[in-house]
Image (cartoon, rainbow, N blue to C red; front, side, top):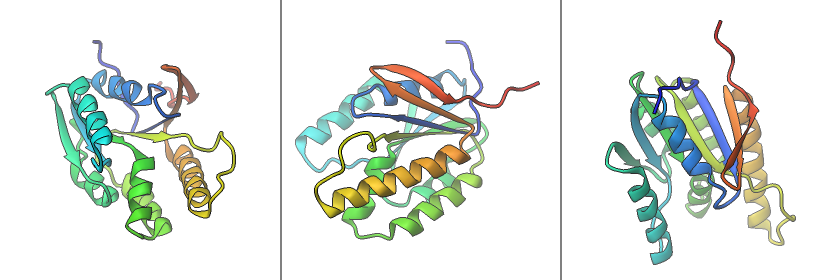
Length: 180
């Protein structure tokens, strides 16, 4: 695969099972940099454990795995480097983990945004676009959608590139700046 430079920050959004993780993995692999995967998911049940294992098998052994369900900003700062690309999969699982652990979502989001400013290499963030459905019936689900939407808007403003993936097809919403 030919090397394609990655911008400093890429945001990849899409629905569940849309192909967003595969697209993000392809971006990282095409960069020619060392591939690092920062996983936020935890295997709380057999079905989730099977999903995690399928992701691992698809990526292959050339990926370096880091697992961090909560302290995303600190782990990103410690993991990034000019010679590697870091893929974070996924922000919606991270937000869910924070909510379940009763963490302050606003403070965690502020820490993440500040931490992204200090990264030392390209980062690709993956997240579920959850705001295109009906308004959820319960307060916790509405809070989750609200926080996810606000996080995505702030990240899209900060990102150099934003892609939306549907049915395995990426659409670039915000192309990276062109180099002259």
